[in-house]
Structure formats: C-alpha cells, structure tokens
Length: 453
Figure 1 (tube, helix red, strand yellow):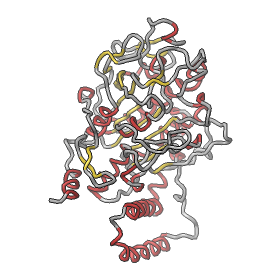
Figure 2 (cartoon, rainbow, N blue to C red; figure 1 turned 180 degrees about the vertical axis):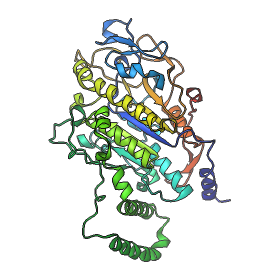
Figure 3 (cartoon, rainbow, N blue to C red; figure 1 turned 90 degrees about the horizontal axis):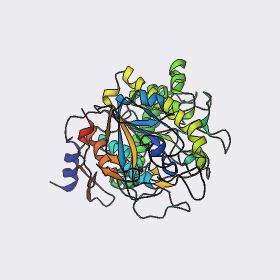
Figure 4 (cartoon, rainbow, N blue to C red; figure 1 turned 120 degrees about the vertical axis):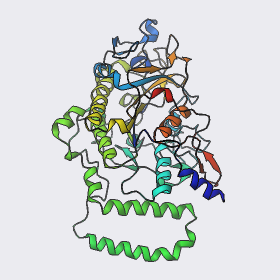
C-alpha cells in the first residue's frame, strides 16, 4: 500500500468513541496572571501574592480571586490545571497553545510574531483536514475564529491560528468585527448590533444575484475544472478548490447566514452573556457549534497596538485593569456560556478549553512598573469543562510562589493530546507534512485521561 493510502486509512480510524463533537477554545491572549486568577498564594509575601484577596470555591482546596465570584460558585462544572508550562517565554507561546508544537524558525516580521507557512497547523485546521478526508467538504465551516483573527485588531497577524504547512484551504473562517476608532477597546464596553456584525462578507446575497444565476456560474466553473485536473496535486490549486467550495456553500446556504446573525438570540440571553465583545463572541461561539462547527476559537485579544492594558498582557496597571475589566468580564461571560451549553443539552458533547499562551511572573514587579507582572511560561493555569470532564477538581500543584510545578507538569503536547482524543482522534495519528512525510499530530504528549469521569 502506498504512503498516501496508509495515511488516508489512518485518518479514517478514530482511537475510540469520541467524547466531544466539538471544541470551544476560549483564548485569553496576553497571558492571564495565575496569581490573580486560579492559583493564588495568599500566604506568600506581598511582593508575590499581588493586590487581591481569595474566596472559597465549590472545589475542595481551591481558592480563587475575589473578583471571580460566579466562577467560584460553579467550579463544580470545570477542572483547573495549575501546571501548564513551556519554554517559549513570550507571546509566541500562541503557537504552542494552538498547535501543541514549538514554533519553527522563520522570518516573522518586525515584531517577530507573524504567522508563516512553516508553522504547524492549528487544532482546528487539523480537524478540518481529517473531517474532509473522511467525508468531503462539510456544509458548515469546521474551524471558526471569533471575533477576528488573532492580532488583527492591533495590526499583527499572529502565529498559531492558521493551517501553516497543511495549506490555506484549512485556515479558519473568521469574522471581521471592527473598532470605532484606532484606540477603541470593544472588549471593555457594550457594543451595538451594528458593531456586532459577525456575518461574513458576502453572506447577505446581492438582490441581482439569484440562486439560479449563482448555480449557472457554479456549473460553468465545474466545466472548467476538467482542464485543470492534472494540476490538482499542486497545493495552491487544492487550496483554491477548497476555499471556493467553502464559499459556494456559504453563499447558497441561508442556514449559514442565519447562524452568523447574533440578532437571532433573545435579548435576555444576550444580556446574561454581557453586551461587550467578549460576551457576545462567546454567545456566537455557541451558535457556531450548534450550527455544525467542530472547532471554534473565541479570542479575547489585544485591542490597541502597543497598549498592553487593552488585553491580559498585564505589564502595568494590573490592579485597575483586572479589577475593572478583565476579571468581571470573564466572570460574567464564561459561566453564562457553560450554563447555556448545559441548558441546551450541549455541554456533554462540547469540550470547553480556557487558556492564555502563558502566565505572569511570580514577583509583582515588571520592568520598573510597580503594578504589573512580566511574561512567565514556566507555570500557568488552564480550565477544561464539558465532554465528560470531571468538575470540581484541580490537577497539578505549583510551588509556594506559583512559579514552577511541584507535581504533575502539563505540556502543550499533553493539552493537544487531550483535545484530539476527546474528539476520537488518536494523538499518534500521522498526517503528511509539506514534503509529504508522515508526522504524528502530537509529539511526546499524553492525553490527560484522569480529567474525565
């Protein structure tokens, strides 16, 4: 049997029955501080523990930040991992946390964060690829990025979110929410319906373009396909075919257009999520999964280039920004998502993964600023919920300053293996890389089976 056939056969063989049909990745870009969220150290010196008090949660032994009371009250719905770590001690941890792999060497622009075609494919891109191998082009975009591609609010095009060497045909379908002005932060304020236009460009059909005319254009394209069949092995042509098929599906589907319309949701539920961009994006994430998406990333991104106070990148003004915006926003909207999924009977089949690309320095001092923390990837938390995850648990223990794991360290490869296996995909499955060589989805990672019931 040829190598392509072997790889194709592997792709059709899930490791076991899937626990999850889909994944929602809540990406807190910038690096939330473990010491102000889920791994607080109230007995540490004031230069370590930070400005906030702890409160009890419903999880034995877990005290979390006083500004997360709703999350404390529903901690029986999720598991906290306190010992995620990796060696990429900067924002390029975005590649680790979205792919499970270290960042390959490449030219990455002046800010050294740009995506390239040498990058590993994101989880959602791999899932898109495997689904297409098994069943052809899906009716609904399998990988969706909300509310905008990572970094685009601030003028970056950040690594880790794309298909990389797998090919552009497996890139996410992303919405394109705009800001009012360059220094606007829609994550920190309520947004109008006019601003919350999650509908993708082109989904509202032109009055003069009837389905009959669209079908005739599609038929003409199909006739032209015969001439280029010999070129199909070229990745650029395959990417174009894939993107064109996705576009045709979206242009001809009223259900897809409706799924991207946040106005379909009841006002009371929208209020419950919060009318800011994060809350409404989480609600849209639920709509995407409900409509058939397999992997949805909802990013709380940096809103303004050069202003770390507009994200979780807490170099300065940590106390004010976390107390007034970040922690209340997370505490309002994440419980709303979990409750909404549960009320609709979706939580048991949706894996919810919440993480940043890193944590913050244990010492409450940053580059001369007295109210901030620097980058720290050597020990930070993440959350899992849904799809059979046992709630009310913690996994791993950090040292007295939340600086390094004391027990049960967890790597990005472990997280990747856990996500893939929850979907019934073997972490050992091989796919062809850019040169056609078989490479495993996960390298030296183990599924965290103990997290599940």
